[in-house]
Amino acid sequence: NDLFATLCDLVGVDIPTGQAMDSVSFAEYMLNKNQTKGLRETLGVWRIQWKQIIAQSIRQSEMKLVHQYQNDRFELYNLTSDISETKDISNVHPQLIMDMFEQLKNISPCYDKWGKFDVYIPWENQTMKKRCLWFKKKVKRCELPEGQMHCRLTCATCDKRMCTRK
Image (tube, rainbow, N blue to C red; front, side, top):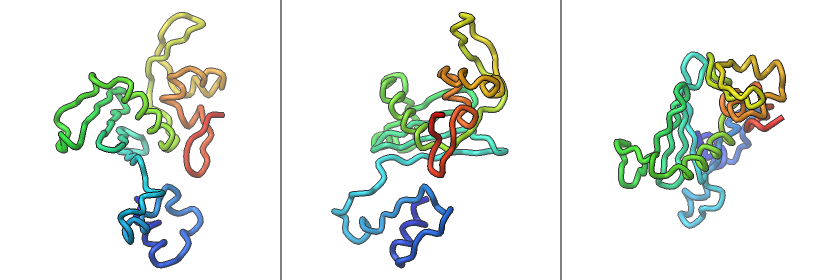
């Protein structure tokens, strides 16, 4: 996804307004391998089916976090020692998963999870199945972690680059 900005940079034209908003040029690096300023430190990828995100991943250095969206399952791989992604090491690095997932949320497109999911409602001291529509009815509910995780479109405002809290 960075080819667009790189090609524009190489031929000396501006990126057209509204195009390639998340594209980062690596033209300087191509011309000088020591010029690493401005290169991506992370790369996010989203798998979308029927207008719904079904999986998302982020790569940071040699680590890759995969989030299976429908079942909230996380997988973590060290791509240096496991390029085929066969050895899930998520149970060994829970803090790294949380950190990488925060980064992924910061760069993710705005989306709402389809269907019902478990929500712990502290003022009722119980867990119930809810949809994003439940959060939309009272925006204050968006402060619950499940709203921030599953209902980003409902519980956030989208600017041209990312979701931000209301």
